[in-house]
Length: 127
Image 1 (cartoon, rainbow, N blue to C red):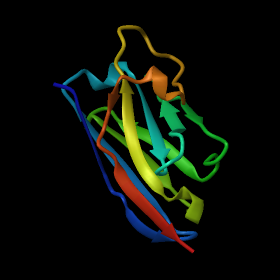
Image 2 (cartoon, rainbow, N blue to C red; image 1 turned 60 degrees about the vertical axis):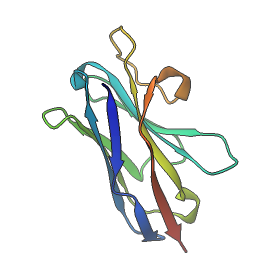
Image 3 (tube, one colour; image 1 turned 90 degrees about the horizontal axis):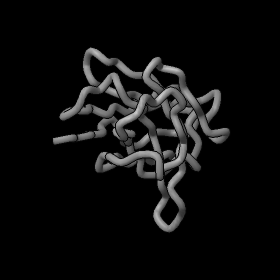
C-alpha cells in the first residue's frame, strides 16, 4: 500500500534551517508529481513546493528563494530544504503524491491535485 512518511520537523530559531524528508513506498516513485504543503490550525492548507517527474520545481511566493524541493528517486525520498526560516513558517508540514494515472509534467500547488498524503511533521520557528 502507498505510504508517505515525513521526518525532520522540529524547532528552529528565526533565520535558521531545517530539512524535511518524505519517504515514499508502495508505488513506482519516479513516475509521479510530489508536493509539500503546510497548515496552521484553523487556517487553509497552503501548497508551498512541488516537483514533477523530471524534477522541475514550482514554489509558492511565500517560500520562493528560501525553500528548495528536491528528490532522490533511488531512495524514493522527497526533501525540502528550508532556509532563512521565519516565525510565520511555523506549521504542520505534509508531503503528498499525485498518483493519478497520467503523466504529470506540471507539478501543482493545489492540494486537490494530490490523492495521497503523509501524516505530517511539525515545524516551529521562534523569533
